[in-house]
Length: 295
Image (tube, rainbow, N blue to C red; front, side, top):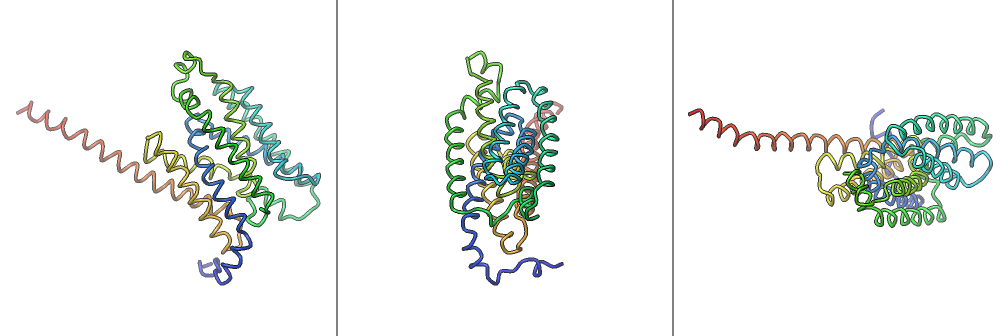
């Protein structure tokens, strides 16, 4: 199959107008997901994102089965997972154990609920891979409100949370409430994971919540530049993915994940070259001093 047969831009403008809400939702998720991802990586919580997404998937599938709001079901599952991880997993080893237990449980429940669901197969598939046409006006308003809550919460706790992430012992000595901050951040993470399920699907949330931030960290270590780059990469991946998915009439998640991965690859190459250049600059004066001393 060639690219010409995969993408059809003949009625692109009309189709784009029909899914304007989805485009807005993707842009919001890309920006917020990129920023959240920076703190996810600082606190080594990439595994937790996957665990929360599995419980979010179970909640969404359960809501679909009983005819309730899928986003509310996803939110309930994600917040329950965030609370369990935050309360039971105070230490990294305990946290990974809790996540390892929750992930298969959530995935198993989600698969069971989908197997019992008698409705359209597209609804089942959409929970896993996302749906670009499932965002109506109330959904996009709710997404914007939840994203604003997450951003505001991050702004409030960002500095002490960063302090605790980079030097937990000193932060504890200074009286930083590490456990409360951890639970608060996990709850914010649960909220953004829950609203991501409808767009990118439960199984590929990492593409927006981890990959853009990981790419940004490959090319910079600045506490200002990294969040800006992560939000930019998330926006490019989310918008680019959904715009390509519209033309291809395919699920959005493969395009978002591919663009995110390509951005990470480019950033990794750039970061590696910068590292080698920096190493040569450091090594050159040492070589010259050694040569002069030998002479």
